[in-house]
Image (cartoon, rainbow over all chains, first blue to last red; front, side):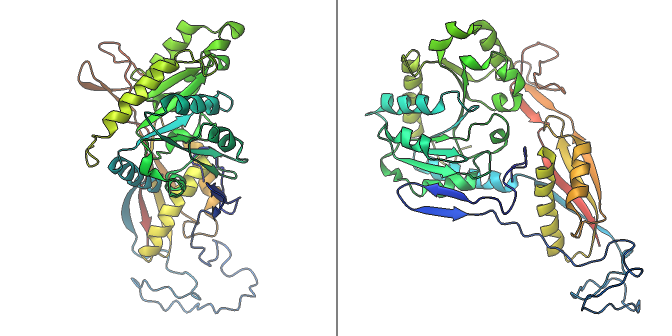
Length: 304
Length: 113
């Protein structure tokens, strides 16, 4: 389940991964122990018709830790002890993401996690990106959506291999979904893997997928203050793409204000202003990726 | 809903470890929550009460330790504290993009018997 919005509760729609024709379904497992105990005040006063026996003899020795299923609990004041846990609530995802990262680095693959709100133009932008990089760099794509494979169909037009993850009710991708999806891609010829996350500016910020770069798209139609409204997401960006710049005049886009807001939240992010439609700014973005892909070939997979 | 899912994740960790430790009951659960994690402690309490019935943590108390946000200023080579997401170094007034603490969401400890 998502830590931000609570989507994807156990038992909700299974997640599907579909690349070339066959699908794998999967549900998140949650094994909670539901101990059969009586709450305070329910011990003796109420009629029971449970078939298990209740031993009310107060005969247990203190310090006993065995717990057979029929026991009722009369030992609340037994010696209490504190267990130090120090476990990150999203720790499991972080571990799986690091595993992905090592796997990708060992293959010299540059991995992008592309995030934005719905409708910022991710799919069109990525389709153009793939075409501009060819033939120098071959790209594979993993795309996440709650439902439909429309984006996968659109992205396949670029000629790149595409795996669609439909998350059902889950509003973000997790490292485990990516590791399953990637098994359906033939990575041997690829130098670049693009993960198009579910359109959402809140929850995906917390989930590392094992990417090298987080790319956040902000279209000129969304308003200059978007970075201020969604600081955790923009703060995690390595690159911010201002998209649909061809529409700037139509929506009175204030470029200086938008750039200032991006710098305020993400001072170290690189910014590209692009229009996938007219091609404006796309060359600079392509050159950046070409350079990073070349550098990735020489990265030591065991380096930090 | 935000907080409900955090507590759900925390409970999964707590119940698994309590089971491994052979606990009969969980009396106290302590979380460490960063000031910039975007989580409201009161809402965590509410979610905790909603989720614990029927578990070993049914009568447990939830304690939340808040971790202040600390940023790193690359210019001054120093850490500074701020509760603002748009943090500016108090000395050189440059914005810092490096958050060193304050995003934590962690199960710190629990008390069992």
